[in-house]
Amino acid sequence: MITVTIAGERFAVPAGTTLQQVDDLHRTALVFGCRAAQCGACVIRVTSGATHLSPPDEDELVVLDVLGVDGDHRLACQCTAFGDITLEIAE
Image 1 (tube, one colour):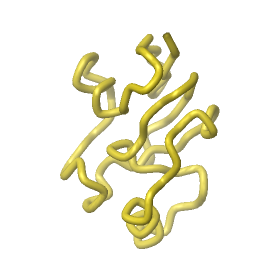
Image 2 (tube, one colour):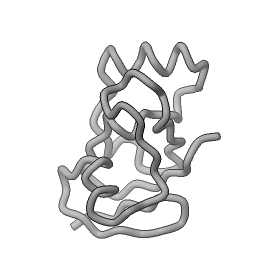
Image 3 (cartoon, helix red, strand yellow):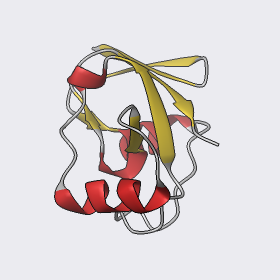
Image 4 (spheres, one colour):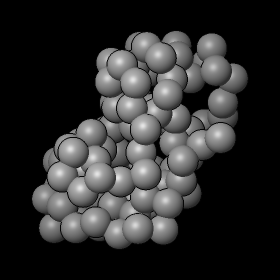
């Protein structure tokens, strides 16, 4: 099991769990819109463990660029956690 910490709340989940699955199971503070890397509603800031997330694909990178956020931001709908991570909801 790994620990995913979202806005100060900790959730124990199996490695390979998507952040969407974490939210579906535990009703986290994450907000999802399209769930397909198109709307940008689920922007998060990874404060630790970024290397434990799946790498961003081209669609995610395009949306992040359009939103003008820096390298520690991701779209939660595109992330799979393989180790302990800590994140905040981006404003």
